[in-house]
Image (tube, rainbow, N blue to C red; front, side):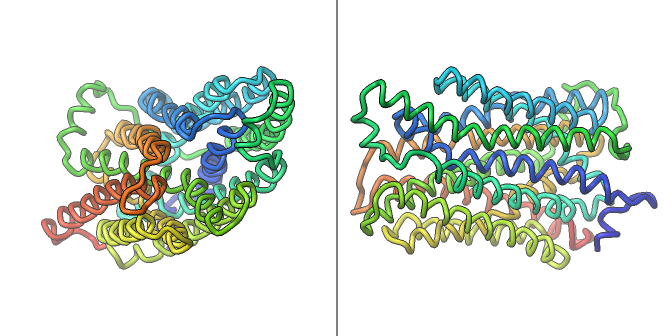
Length: 444
């Protein structure tokens, strides 16, 4: 299978594939350190959940803002140039954590996250279509899922680093205890916790530099690097009239919102469940973070399994089935006030594993030489991760109770709606490609 999906025109792309796939692991590492840090920032700066949720908002706004500039850049130059520039921006954003820590204010961290994510936007806009082009189109979705399988591996490492080197070394003082500190005590504690938080980001900066140097030195393939004289307005107009692509961007927007909701607020959800069972806030947070690592392990294993299943099951069908299972588990998250709800929330990650690369691969079918701009549109859809979680955070902060359910439980109606959209897209894509086009191959 590997030879088939990584060979095009008689050329094997294994080494370039490995190097580009390392970028998938890198942004997984970075992104999934962010979710647990919403709670950490809220404690360090004594903020509400909604204010803490500005971290993923700033982060994913970078994806939205830079996706089309990235597409225009790689359209003019090459995928490799886009990857190198993305890594450069990423390293620069991470480096800004040092002056942000020295200033001791919250908003410089948001600026650093934004610049860091502008780099990740360049990387995702470059790497996803680059992987898509490293082999025949009929195996593109499989190839994307294989590359994306290394994203949760990086994410698990990032979450473990957060657990051991950030959450585990921050002050154990609870949010209520911090609220009672004097300004001098609070500033001393804040400085300590920010020093703990910044340490892993310095390591991440070094890793980014190493990957940048390796890719710069490697001769990379020119697949997909043909330039088009077509004006941007014309390309966008053509893409807008492709129903499969248009609906794919919408589905990606809602999927990204659901993913970040489920991964960001698993800490709040788990902390509440374990506090009800009698644990103190700090141990409850640590245990909730461990559950989030288990969720990411499910996500990683499931992605490899789904990549294998796509040899026999059409991606659209598999997407709709897992989306339906995800929304069923989300109902359990809403209705169960105990550990059963936590188990459902962990299980959702296994269902989400194939969604991003599969929606991406399905949506790119038939876009022709507009693939770079099409890829940018799908990366811009990551804006859903910036727009949707704050809505859930507002519900959590409202402290509303309905039918005996807490605001934390009720808030998961937001990802429930998102999974409905994904399920509908998967079904429509399957019908469009296989039922209405019976001659289509039964993969990719």
